[in-house]
Length: 465
Ligand SMILES: Cc1cc2nc3c(=O)[nH]c(=O)nc-3n(C[C@H](O)[C@H](O)[C@H](O)COP(=O)(O)OP(=O)(O)OC[C@H]3O[C@@H](n4cnc5c(N)ncnc54)[C@H](O)[C@@H]3O)c2cc1C
Image: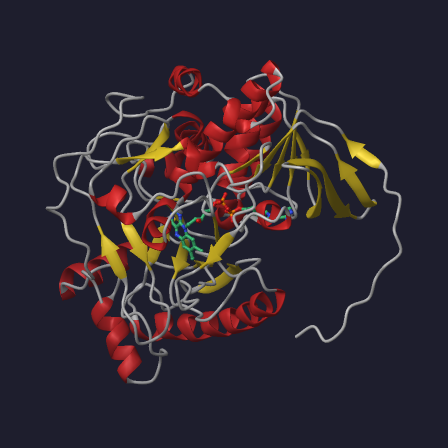
């Protein structure tokens, strides 16, 4: 709790960079945004606080990419799909052989992915600045006139024409005074997870165990048994995600740390410490209860706790659960989403909220969700765009973030090239044409607003404890 404030002397700061477009945050949305902006001719600077790209997919070791398809066809295409294929190609023969045809739930080979991102972003012509935090914005009316960055070289100002907030937490928008909401009405938040990678597992033995026992790979019966024996803490009665990177190396997304606000350093600190402690408990559980895991060794835990949810900005349009359920299509769609609503329990005794769309179906993601109210040259891409909480629980996954990022980047380059005042002046039909020409998929009839016939026939409910 802050008890007092101190006024610091005013300071003259050097201007360090003057790109057309600056992107803050190098996760899925920021990587795609920077690549798209640069490929479309804008001089582009990508700022990332860590020493590598990938956001939650690398820093937090989220073990797999969520589905790119609606169960029938790829919905997320363009840069996101291209990066997935590049990772498969670069991960080695064994990995490629196993996942060549797969587009849904492809495991993340973290060290390969970091390199794929480096190469792809640099090849696009964008410049990358690592180990740098964006921590203040300068405002002139409804415009951002500068961004203050801090790194080992000191503090300096980046002056760009267009600003893309891909920080995952809407840091830039919050610094610029854009209204936002964190979590639910009572401040409830999805829990964090400290993901990790183990080696020394035996895949064949594990699958034989599943077959012999009828257990599912989320190990429901085994997890419950261990919870009853006091070998695992209370909470979700299954493993959220297990991703086999090779026959002996596995990534885990398992268990929850509750009550973490990812915009608070103290919470992140507590979560890091509790998360590592929980991993130790889980490793003991895996060795003791799960055939094939007797001899595992922990090789890496996340550099930070995985954060599913923080701020959602108030944008020109807020995508709500009724839009999701009715599979609504908007005139200004810049992406389609078919991933299910996937809200993890806010505390150890509550439930998951899961809602799938029918196979082959998706809804539109309008451009206006990315436009923060009251700011002209700022756009937000990624998990913090303007939506209600249920929709955030669906939109938040990495394939969607690639698609939103790509749209933000193309829009920024268009605005820069045409000398537009900001993102609202970007002609939507032209943006959609450009996205489609560059590989994105915007549905069967892009630009035509309609509500699918399924409206009203789908109810929103808890399907899964
Ligand atoms: C435990 C867990 C499991 C998940 N499982 C899956 C899954 O299986 N598949 C899937 O597709 N998705 C999954 N997700 C969701 C997905 O990983 C994230 O929602 C997604 O990565 C969000 O992308 P983003 O680009 O919006 O933000 P992020 O990935 O969070 O990237 C933001 C980047 O911005 C940087 N940054 C932030 N603030 C600043 C600043 N002020 N200055 C400089 N840099 C900054 C960060 O370091 C980070 O690199 C999971 C998430 C979690 C936490």
